[in-house]
Length: 631
Image 1 (cartoon, rainbow, N blue to C red):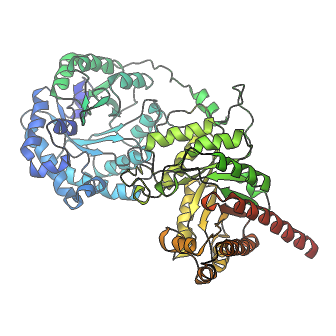
Image 2 (image 1 turned 90 degrees about the vertical axis):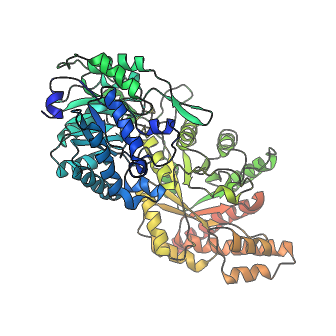
Image 3 (image 1 turned 135 degrees about the vertical axis):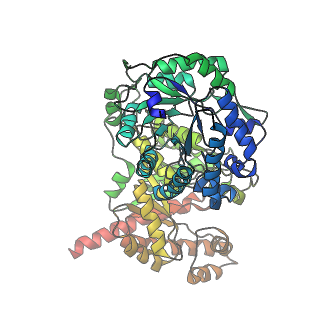
């Protein structure tokens, strides 16, 4: 009799955590490497679970994939680690009648696009073949946050074997997956793709796992599984610990059985004591064969409503009609001007707001605020943006840097912007912290700019990456940075196109000081419909020009421009005027090829940016008049 035959007639208890148990024993490195270096310690844990009554154990190969082994320079040991893990589990189970499942863990987790699907497939194929070569009784696909990744892995595994396959997803505390699908929808897809057992594992404790399984009908042909965590983890004195007790897990096993689960195990934080309690609790309990499901916390009708509403609320709390987004407005104009005014480094803001007023009077289309540029702390740009919008009536466009916020912080930040009605942003990775004046600070980089663009687009769909509903759709215009000063322009454009594929609506470039490069940019990007705002930053001195050229990433000056500024190295006023002359000439060329100008204000000298803004309008009007006369 095989595993599936036994699941038809009774509830079976599987083992618990491997990694967190090793961690509690003082090991804090690649757990899968222990299959080769400390095999007896791994075997002892298998035997402890078997001694507690587990009838299914899994191999210590959860993270034995190419991507995660690379962190320890162990990718070349992938096959040997997986084969050793299978042999250890089989030797521990010998003579007990227990089944051994070869474990393959999800790679992508909650970071979108972290690893390509092609890379995942290549790694998983190697892992599957290694596990099957050692005679495992089936495969366990666990902790998959990304539905696409699990579908691809299951399809690959099903082609490789007819043995039982358990496919388990991980979800946040929403009952939805990252793509917005429900557990019931996902389980049905997995069953159609050939999974013999479908279920949940990790992230959730027994309470939430039972709660969400109430919404899932019994599968048509497959069986349900559940491997909950031992509650939520806590961080105490530098260690992560789980506190849910064994008795609680025993009672929870009965609750899970009541929702149709036939294979019950444990994930993070569970121990042989938890497994023993579950074995005792379900002993002699027959599996259920009929079930009445409960409605989701958010009904399907509500999910559709979310996709059809907008995020900006009126003061009455009612949802107004969707307004045109920033990039749609500027794209319809013959020219637009964005001006950057850096938030102050101190709490003295009067100069900043004088600049806002001056730029408003000059006729800017939006004021953009950097996010701790050059990794130096400044007043939070979202706070200033709120004042700029509400007090001065100027449209704020905020930079959002991945450097300073983890995934939680970025999502919270975007929610705050949307709730404040600030719907224009530019997604940037951000300069590393070591370039700033707080070199001991940590650069987070949970996301990069591509990930942040995708995240913001998910907000426009009304959902978080966890699958949780936002209740309303955001209405962001998502901008992205484009470096026009790269050595190989074609490769720079390819990167730009990848950002478009991620969802970028418009682009803002680094400062350009080469008239010929502006023309080259036009020809390299004229096939794109997204608007590009070409960057201009007036030079204020010969020293300033030299510093920008030699020390600031992404900025290059031509020999001609450097020479023009060098002529006035002893005359500050003349140098500043020459810098303005250079900017005007560049603007003339920009307007010949592009409709968007992005002016960066040097050292809060907003008078220069206001003067250049007026020049853009005058030059554009002159060009328009000439075109009319010619026609």
